[in-house]
Amino acid sequence: QATTLEFVLQFGLEISGINRKLDHTLINFVQSPRFLRVGVFILMSSSWKNAVKRKTHKERAQPKARAKWGLLEKKKDYKRRAKAHHERQAELQALRRKAALRNPDEFYFGMHSRSTKAGLVDQDGGDTPLDNDTARVLKTQDLAYLNMKKAADVKKVERLRSTLHLLGNSGPASAGGAGAG
Image (cartoon, rainbow, N blue to C red; front, side, top):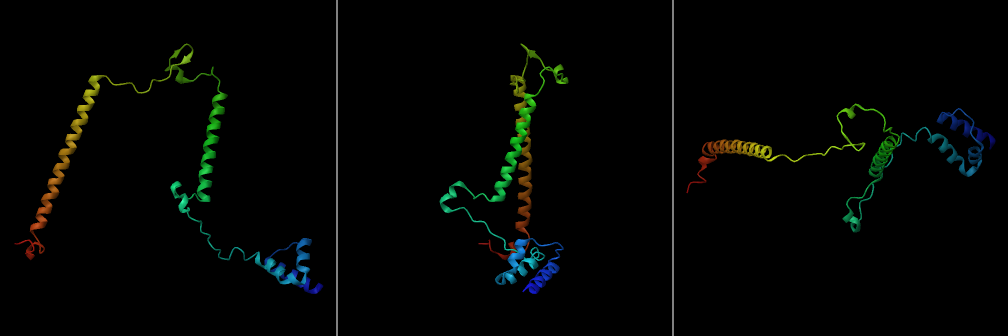
């Protein structure tokens, strides 16, 4: 049996391309007469495992009782969503750290155009309401633009109707007498 074992180990090593000693657990596994062929298969299969076509596993659908919560989130979708969430959290944490470590006495060129009240930077008020004259001018401009677009659309409709009218009078379809009554 020792010669058979040596042959199996040598054959297996030559097939799989392994040029190193096997550990004792695999040797003991192969020495058992019941697992002699299995041991050879294990040694041979390592070079062929990537060549075998594998079955694509389909993921299940959302159960009908849970349909009110939308589509069932698959693992790859969860991983993408979790990764994006962690990236956002890391970015927010970095911004918080940067704000905490900021030196309030440091000079920035934006300080030239900003005003301060009681030592605090005056925040921009955002959008200021327009005065009545400016709002009236903008509304008339908007109305004029809409009237111009309406006139262009009316002309386009008239042009298309005229081409349809020409198509309806000419050709073998109108000569058939289907509309003559």
